Length: 129
Image (tube, rainbow, N blue to C red; front, side, top):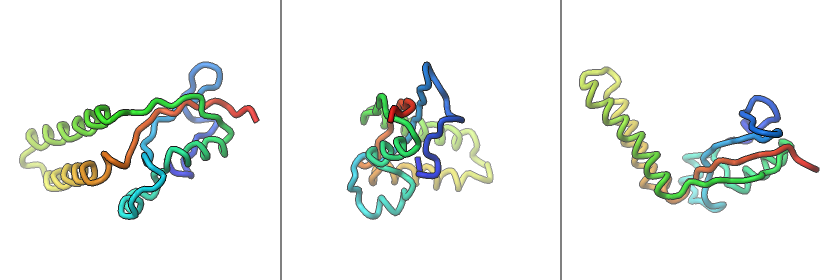
């Protein structure tokens, strides 16, 4: 979530008395390697997301983080879908693009994504200040 896509009081799913849910990838550590930071400039740290939510007038009521196994299942599902598509479309004109896409996803995941990325559902409530 970049600063330009910070949560707003309208336009996001609501639940209960003004709760907002925001599911987003974020940097797992405040200090990530420079090569990673250049690759994903719009990915904030959890601390930056907290600040962005507060700046937008919200407080964080809860956070539910994915664990490593959740991440593996999520990424593996994407790879399996791409591999299935490739198997079903051997002569498609976008085949080379999809092969490159799969390899790029896997390179990112094993190179740094698994270690430096996190995924969470942030539950936001209107700020009380």
